[in-house]
Length: 412
Image (cartoon, rainbow, N blue to C red; front, top):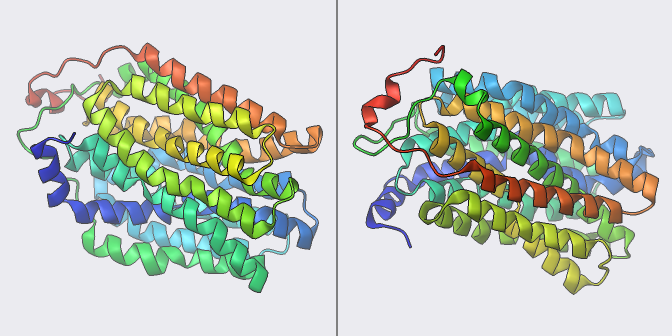
């Protein structure tokens, strides 16, 4: 399915893909998000905090991530990815460590807030910029491979935290999670992440549109609505899996293993999606992919047996995180690469808002309704809207002479 040119790109820059994958795995968005589900019940049992109060911490990590995204995009354009990412890893570690030591919700929230603010340089804006600037023929596939780091977090963190909680407590579990950016991701980024983005010469590029005209366009609005609905859905359902499964009678370790299959399916899912959007019209691919988790959520409304729950998690994993790949690909495809960092950062704010608000909203919905059925049903509807609205994007814009890439200014 890949062309020789695409294969050559992947062989040439595989180290960059590894650095990006490990970078996003330990990012300010991935570590808090994939940790909170497995931490919710242990924290609830020890502290008496409500589940919605515990998961409200994501509003600080992802919500502040929405505010920092445009600044991160500007910093990456000005200083390069490596100079932005390295201090970001230290910030993620510091913030998560403060949360691990928390004895009150105020300090817990403070830790998650600092994770977002000090770790802003690790967010997907950075990694997507690196990939879109280095890959042309294999851009979709490269995005899928680079952003597969979120799958690593989805697989490993719930099980790791569950084991650590059983052997110690949630404070120790979260503290060990906090050091992962320093011991895993930072060294790889130091050696393998390029200091400055380098565009391949001679490759066709899309037109450089102004920030103003892009933001006012219907296509920008479509992408914004799609990403907001998609991440409201995915953040709401994924952080609910472990507590929902234990509520239905599964042991914590078993619930964590089943929920971890989301991450297992994310890996082939992301690569497959990347290959498909390199070959076919990406909005149609995105629509089909996002309808898969919609169907899975409908089944989760009433499923209780391990087999059904596992199959639903695998279906969720095939599409979970597809929004990141699609958002980066579609932003570059419809608006060009010259303004990519700034436009992607603005659209990423919608993703972060959805990721920030959904966990607490869905936990509150569970507290009001008595179970997670209403949450899963809401996710199904949001996934369907996120996918179907992509079909309104229309055909890709025509590709002009490459010199057009630098011929406009942001003030146009």
